[in-house]
Image 1 (cartoon, rainbow, N blue to C red):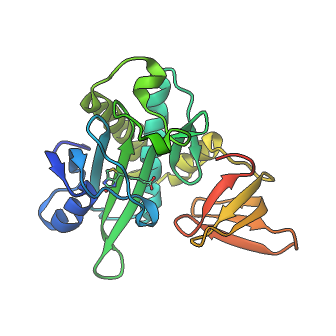
Image 2 (image 1 turned 90 degrees about the vertical axis):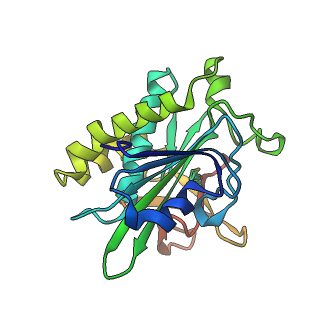
Image 3 (image 1 turned 60 degrees about the vertical axis):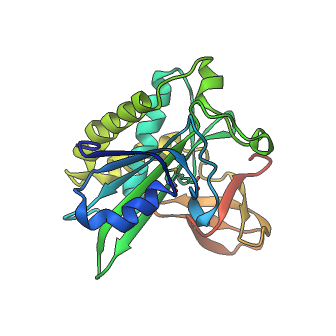
Length: 248
Ligand code: BTN
C-alpha cells in the first residue's frame, strides 16, 4: 500500500533527493514527507518554495513489470489529487502534463524521476508539492493559490496526504496499473486536462522564447502541435512549458 512504509522529517533538503539516495534500502510504495524542504525542486530543476504548512512528499515505486514510464505514475497522482480536491468542492484542472490549477493558479506541482542503472528503470520517484496551509510568497500570488484560502480553513496536511494516497492506490494504481489498463487512466486524464485538440497554446522554451501553435494531438507522452507555417512538432513534457494562449 502507498505509505505503508512512512518516513517523516521536520526538515530536509528535498524528499525526492532522500529517495534518490536511499531507494535501494526501501520498499516500493514508501512515502517520505517533510514539513519543510530547504532545497525543494520541481520540473526542469526549478526551485520549489517549501515552507511550513504545505504538503511536500515523495513516493517510491520499484516496478517489477510494465508500465515503466514515470509519467504513468505521475498521472495516478494528478488524478488522485484532482479527485481529493473535488471532495473539498474544488474544481481543479490538470495543466498539461500534470500540475493542478484552480482558477488558473497553481495549487499543486508534481515531478517524476526515474533511476536507471541498466536498461529499464529500477525505481520511479514521484514528488508532490501542494499548497495547503503555507502562505504563498508575495511574488507568486498571481500564479499560486493554497487550499486554506479556497476553503476558508486549515486542514491537516497528513489527512490530505492520506486521502490522496488512498485514492491513488485504490482507484488508479491497483485497478489500472497492476491490471495494465493504462489507457483508462489516460482517458480520464484527457477529460480533465486544461487543453484540448485545436486549442491555441504558447510554447515557452528554456530561453523564455515564445511561440504560438495549435494542438493537433494529445498522446500519453507528448503533444503534437502545428506552427503557423504548418510545421508539425512533438512536444515532450519537461522540455518546454505550454500555456494556454492569453492564460497562465
Ligand atoms: C513542479 O511543479 O515543477 C513540481 C514540483 C514538485 C515539488 C515536490 S515537493 C516534494 C518533492 N520534493 C522535491 O524536491 N520536489 C517535490
